[in-house]
Length: 372
Image (cartoon, rainbow, N blue to C red; front, side):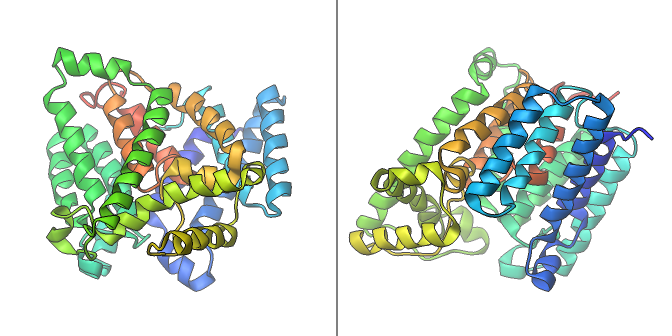
């Protein structure tokens, strides 16, 4: 029996992003079960695609060698998740990620799940919209992508949902919503369109690194001048950016660079969590700055921390994947994805990558037309 890889990936993407009680699984089993569910689904799809193609390409062979090498270096199976990148690459180079069979049912089921989880976790930490993750910022990304997809099917409903999504009280959500409607409002503006034409994945990566280092340095300076305030909740989160939540989130990026400058050999292996925490604590003590046990939230710095110089290869493959689905009309979505990837580190890995690809694919017509 021939396996439809796109159909399976579409199903498991919505299942893992919206339906499964990820937070409950994490508490119950002390492991991120949802990520492993998606990993096994990806492995099944990968070997099904190989069986259909009846050959192993140079890309497949090279990718598996790198993945097994990273597993050997890291002495664990965590790098096996990179097979999801390989699956995404194979699908976008064949029939695409989306399978439209049952697609509307997936959207409806995801919306119902968001309503249920939001009711269950209503008011937790002063937030009011959730997914099964319970973590509101990642939930904010999930519902933002979902509402964008619903907007293609029903523009009015999508707009209403996007506005309601502000109740996540996620600053990333509010920023991305502002960016989305900015591009919507000026979509016929020649200057804005000219700017969008210049945007590419490669340029966005370079800008991201430079911008993140600048912002991280800015927060370091703000701390030295005593401008960092206590953590805020509710509407106050939108009124103050320079709080300790953002300070730790951004300053950890400059710490990573300092660690690699002082220990260049680590670029060959990357760093495990405990190892990074150790070096990060040493920097905090030496510089007499506050310390919190936190890893880089930024996608690029996070992978640079985990895989060292091998991260550049991962970014290269990611670029090849996204370049297959990016065009002039969906570049505003790409900008939004980079905002989330830079600030939260979400959107380009695991099942989030496939949700991002689905959204980019659906907006190849600018979000104006339903999928035919």
